[in-house]
Structure formats: structure tokens, C-alpha cells
Image 1 (tube, rainbow, N blue to C red):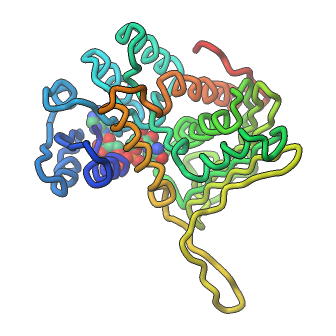
Image 2: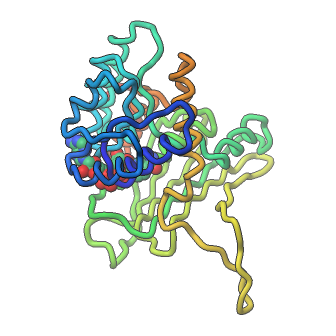
Image 3: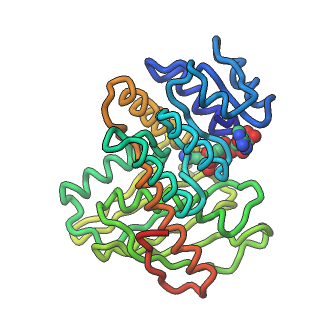
Amino acid sequence: MGAGIMGADHARILHRDVPNADVVMVADVDRDRAEAVVADIPGAVVSGDARALIASPDVDAVLVASSDATHVEYVLACLDLRKPVLCEKPLAPTAAECARIVDAEQAVIAGGLPLVSVGFMRRFDPGYVELRGLVDEGAVGVPLAVHSVGRGVGAPPGSDELTVTGSAIHDFDIVPWLISSPVVEASWLAPRRSPEVTDRQDPQFILLRTADGVLVTVDVFLHARYGYDIRCEVVGSQASASLTEPHRLVRDHGLTRSHGYAADWRPRFAEAYRLQNRAWVESLTAGTPSPLATARDGLQAALVADAVLASMHGGGGFVPVGTTP
Ligand SMILES: NC(=O)c1ccc[n+]([C@@H]2O[C@H](COP(=O)([O-])OP(=O)(O)OC[C@H]3O[C@@H](n4cnc5c(N)ncnc54)[C@H](O)[C@@H]3O)[C@@H](O)[C@H]2O)c1
């Protein structure tokens, strides 16, 4: 569902890289986009109607990669028909909508296997997985702080809020997952704004505090120009550990050593998307619980986003993360 940048990528991954997955149907309000995706997938057809795709007896499971605001409608439609659904992040733009999904899922499954998975793919990135393993085994000692940086070359027109609900939302999921401690309060800050960006405050800085007292800095700069750059450092009482930018080569030239950056998230997280989608389909075929983020995880990240937005609109102080929207 949704044949834009991510939908096209997911369809290609499911078709080429995921055993036991057949992409049978693609829908988008822009039919040309759906046509372009099925052109590379023998046997797949375009559905002009999103509801018809979800209801089709040929469709066992749905991957929702349409625009954020459409997620809640499509995920609820999947739940109505008891179809497993992998929904791209954010599960929904607000915690209230995420809570509707959590409640609907509970009512439908009645103690059975969850049907909703959320595409917080960083949980499958080999670097983040290794970092979490180090923290778990105590290799950094007691975690004290986390520094998380997310920079992009540029972004389509958006808003201050969209940076939080669309981009920093990844940090609201991955950091508590890394250090096994939920975020309990959040604060939003902004430096002088880039003169090249007119539609939103860019960059933005977010401070999070976890239940264990770990302080987290999140630096999101969507128009950083130089490349897509994701960094994460866990600072512990005995050591610190950081992700390295995965690259295949460095270039030595003119008294300089350099390496390239990806232009966007797809090459940087290609392995994470592949491993995530494989794990999802494997769990569906095996009838085991999905190892992806759950609807409740989607809600938890949205509750942090709500607190960050309250701080943004309320002067920048720390705001407690609610337990209900
Ligand atoms: N996990 C990640 O790393 C990651 C990265 C980028 C985007 N995303 C998420 O993936 C989703 C898609 O993002 P994108 O970058 O591909 O955006 P995009 O704008 O390229 O694609 C969105 C597509 O949804 C279609 N669409 C809009 N309304 C629809 C509707 N009602 N029914 C069916 N299709 C509809 C649009 O026509 C468009 O083709 C978003 O939720 C976004 O937040 C996730």
C-alpha cells in the first residue's frame, strides 16, 4: 500500500530478497506510481482501491507505506479483517491514533498473536544490534548518556512538527530499545536556524531522559547537505561505543583520506530493511510472534513525540512522557 520511495523499495525487497513472499498487488492513489512498481514484478497487479487490496482473498498480509496520515485507516482496516500488517513508521502521527490501533488490535486478537508490526527498521541494522549487545553484556559499564545524530541532504517541504513525528521518531524507538529503559521526559531546543531552510526549524535538538536516568541528546538536521549521516554513541561508566558509518571504501587523494556518504536512508539501511522484512515474513509463515516493533512500541514512540511537541510549543522545558494520550 503506497508506491512512493519506501513502498517501491519494500516491494522490490519483498520480491527479490524475501523467500516465501509474493508481491501480488500494489495500490497507490497515484496509479502511475503503482504501475511503475508492478512493471518489475511479474504476476503483480495494480489495485485502484486501497480497501479492495486489503480485502482481496489473494492478499495474506499488507505492508503499509503510504503517507503518514493514512496509516491509521489502513491498519484498522487490516485489523477488521484480521490480516497481519507491517506499517511503516510512524504507526500514526499522534499518540491518540496509535492508542486506537493498540485498542483495536487487543479487541481483535483476544490474547492471540499480535497482527500489527511497525517498521522501526533500525532494530534490524547490524550496527545497532551489535551496539545493543555490547550494552547488554555490560561492556560499557553503566550507560550514562547517548548521543544520537540524524542528518540528511535535504527534505521535501514540511513543518517543525514533521521533523519530530517523521524523523526523530526513529530515535524515540531505538534509544530506549538500545539501553532497555523507557523515555520518561523530553525537551525540545533549537539553535539559530539554517538560513537556507524556510519551511521549518532546522536543525532541532531534543533531550530525552530515561527511567534509568540516562540523558539522550538527539540532533536532527534534515538539510545538512553533505550526506545522509546517522551516528549513535552510548557513553558508559567504563567505556563508550559508537556506530561507524558503514562504507565499502575510502579514497586517498591530495593529502586526504575520504569516504562517500549515502544520498538518503535507503542505502544506509538497506540491510536493515531486508532483514526486517525477512523476519516479518518468516514469522507469518511459521505462525510465531513477529519480532518487529509492536503497535505498543509505535504508541510508546508517539507518546515521546507528543511530549517533545508539547515542549516545542511550551517554551522548551522538560515535559513528562504520558502513559496515555
Ligand atoms: N523506515 C524508514 O526509514 C522510512 C524512511 C522514509 C519514509 N518512511 C515512511 O514511509 C512512508 C512513505 O514514505 P515515502 O518516503 O515513500 O513517501 P512518498 O511520498 O514517496 O510515498 C508515499 C506514497 O503514498 C501514496 N499515498 C498517499 N495517500 C494515499 C492513500 N490514501 N492511499 C494509498 N496511497 C497513498 C502517495 O501517492 C505516494 O506514492 C511514510 O509513512 C514515511 O514516514 C519510512
